Length: 117
Length: 110
Image (cartoon, rainbow over all chains, first blue to last red; front, top):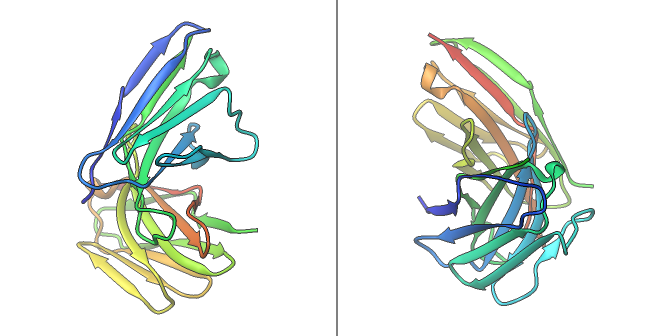
């Protein structure tokens, strides 16, 4: 199956630090990538959808200036949590899809556990 | 509004004890229904896609079925390694994004 690589797998840092998470599609061109947040014992909450070469579409309630998304190539999207605070601590997961008109499954990275002290 | 409800929230089975997980959905035109398996601390792993009512897919001990209102994931003679959280997601026509259910946490005891 399709392989999506996400790095780093775990980050522990001080409050006020900005953290960048990378999501790479290793074996197919991901026109669309998705960023999710998952709280303990809860399901995936979509934060934003990013399309290669254009601005990301954020879900209601997600701060654009807080969670910066860049999707500069068909194989790489990045999520930067700016000036992170303890309430930003969570499990962040990316997925890669095959375009706006695709009904194919999304393939997920292994997530990034972010802990802000 | 598009919605996905999974039940039960948690399920404990003895090894070999078959059962089914339910995913009920409300969507304005189903484009696809997806089943994933998620292990603790990992991202979801794709299992099946179902596109139309009556469709069935099978893989080892798992079988997924679809009606116009719900999907079932049947687990036949489960083993401890089947223990995981199983997630269901739907995609509506005209939209990229998936709506995920809250998952069923399956625990299979040896």
